[in-house]
Image (cartoon, rainbow, N blue to C red; front, side, top):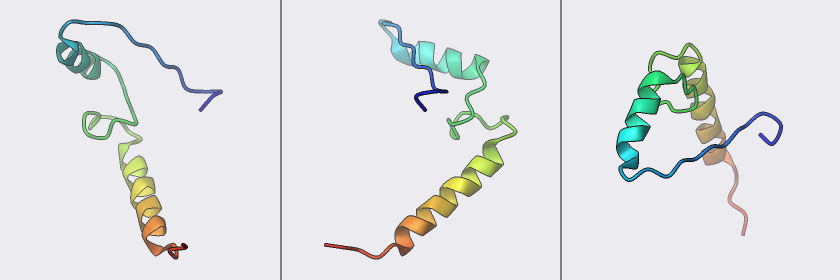
Length: 62
């Protein structure tokens, strides 16, 4: 992530309106809830499901 991720922020008095606008205009492949049109979405859902399953199957250590 350090090599590929970028973070930006902006102060906005009604951040939820800016968020909805950005989500509508941008292709955000990691936002499964709002990126239903992204071609990577089905694969990401599959990878996340596999990761959850592996986590459930891990032995609990104390």
